[in-house]
Length: 625
Image (cartoon, rainbow, N blue to C red):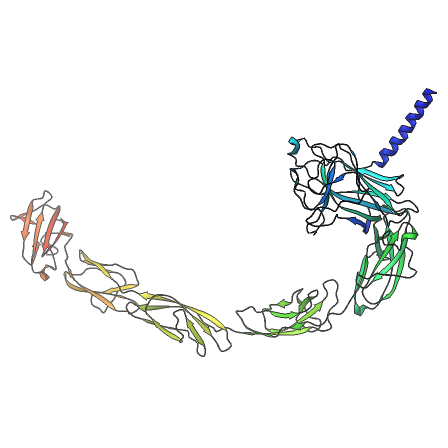
């Protein structure tokens, strides 16, 4: 007997454990479609705590201020102890409150309430938002985690319909609201349930939480709607006539095992009307000639199909009939200058598009989906209004013309003027207005400073163009040096330019070197090729031979310096290579015959020193025999 009793006890315990394991399954959300909330609790709003929950809702004590272990409060703040200070979860809730719980030292139930107005034999989703208020650093890092069990009981509080645990909700470094849900199904004839929340953890340091936004919603299959062409929508232009199509609602059987239907229609997605007799999973819409939306209400039990607290809704099938768009409104023909980019524009309602063509009918599509168009050629262009969804064009295309006026034809140029002179700059065009960068407003201006000038020329059509003029100054040559190099005269200038040179002001040459000139007085002329004037400088050309040959042939027999006769005083000193003075003379005709004391000197190099007034010249020459 004892053994049998023990075995019976084990069997009963095993069965109970099995039931408990099944009912303690993981929490989860509705896997199909959800209806509108049939019950919600957000605990109100306001800056004062409370009110306390109705009697029987909780075994915890209500605290108007700081809730200690085993207490709760209803508050818009969680700024107690060293908890996180957070707002409630409800979106857009000004000073919204939440249910704040400081868990008791003993695990157990801390919240219950009856939820009525449910439908029998219907699947629901219960959900709520929870947050662990204890910081991760609180309780020296050893805070008790939050762990809550949700239970759904029948109205007699004897049949447990579903339950699930949140598992440990850890202490975090930053606060985090999290949503938990539980799916259950009412029994036949059952219209209310009891929601319970139990604390799975013992109290102490930690296990402090806030709860908000408790919601019950119906839960059912996801139901798609398509027609016999497997389309989920039909969009037509109104000139295509009325529409007849057969719609089929297809559930995914994720929640329901059976289905009852009621089809509805709406002109605006706001007002829905039941379609009489349309209670099958398919419905044929006949002769529809205006925009209409279709959907089905679905319930697992036919008794619930018309109860919006119990049913779910299918996807919406859209049968849209688009009206033919009104013609575009032109914002005016455009007359512009060729260097401008003023577009052609039209206006249409914001949900329509405009396409541009080169003909009133047919023609070539030039630009899509733009209310403005900037063609490069003058002409008339046509704007057609259309739907962005399907081809549904306006009855007429709107003509908009473009006239393009040419801009004044000007040419940039470079103008040169003589140093110390001026130049006249011209815009070149008559019958126009002028704006120079100097501030002047005449066709021509006179300037004397090199640089870049510009003039904005505007014709009688209001079209403008800018002419640029680079003004360059022509400098006169600046003679830097004139030297004699044997019988040659060499000229150098201090500046560069296209210069030419002369010694008689008649014949000019581009090279600054004049060869084979006898010694004497010369006037050197230098000028630019642009005829901006001539500069002159007098020069006495001293021809100092580089060698002489005293061999009695009467050709180059004497070392003689030419040009000294034009100076008031001069003297010549000749030295051999040892520095011995061989010859000195201060006559106007400075020369040497190659002898010393009546004796011919050997062929070699000799040096001279020539003094002319205040100047002195030194050099060497060869005596050749």
